Length: 252
Image (cartoon, rainbow, N blue to C red):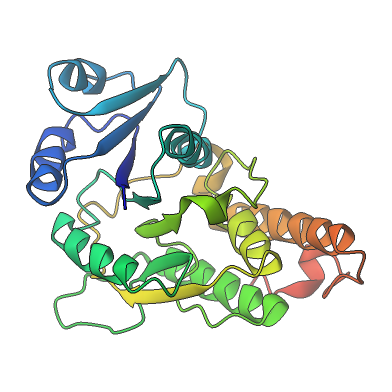
């Protein structure tokens, strides 16, 4: 069984060396997707040995970085991809836990959840992020009969052959709003495992219109609505919800 650790980065000069040093303590097959960094990230990556790197010439988006990581893993013959962020919000010490869960061979997506088992040492997330996560997680569960507690955690293990069944093209932060509907429609086996809730830098932003929480929620709902309609059409079945995104949720 071959497992790849895939780490999207964008302007992570502050963290990239320390995160990669920690990851290498637990696993040696590492792919970094540099999503058009304009700080010193690319220089630091060029100086490192023993990692694979994909460079985007411009910032294409978090979702596109994951899509490219899945494609790389498939073409290189890996069986699983563990995705994690590079801002120290995902603990490399959890990699052996993910590897152990993979060996159970009873899931296709093993998703970290920051809310499955709250801990006393958890950080408090910005209130708008927690609220939006809760709204979207509840909506996904309702539409697709899932039991998620955290729709947006990027610390996940993905079975490569299962990911081949999906057609993923949402390039930005709304990527999970496409992943979950397609995974459910494809019958993928999904489990969550608890991970620590860490927010080292609450001032970090999404960029552009997504910095406005109301616009961010509307955008996520738009993507979820579109994907819900698409998977229903592909299955030649009525959509579980044919209302507009605004009619599905409260924007107060």
